Amino acid sequence: MEALRLDDATAQRVRSRLFTEAVELTPNGTGGKPLLDCPWNERSLRFALESSLRASARLASDPAQRVVLVDRANAVRPRTWV
Image (cartoon, rainbow, N blue to C red; front, side):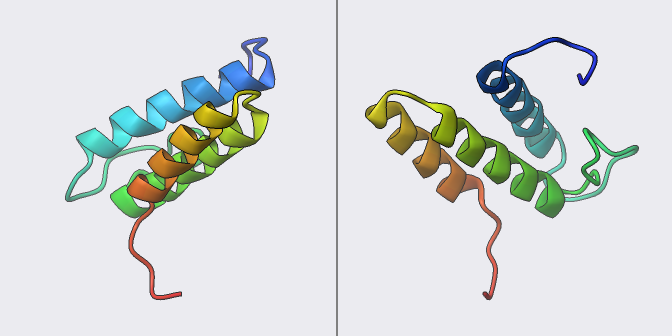
């Protein structure tokens, strides 16, 4: 993906889509090689997806779209104690 010449917003949308699909493919186990430098396990993929969605929210010019993206990020974030 790094070889593609994408603006920041488009790159984050592509990353989010890839991580979304990966999370759906990996509900209970681990996969193979890392995806965009992210270990192929559900927890790591969810953190990467959350991060990508939050980055997209920061880049969004529409306030309503920002809220949607942050809500999605909150929904995919894995449960943590901290």
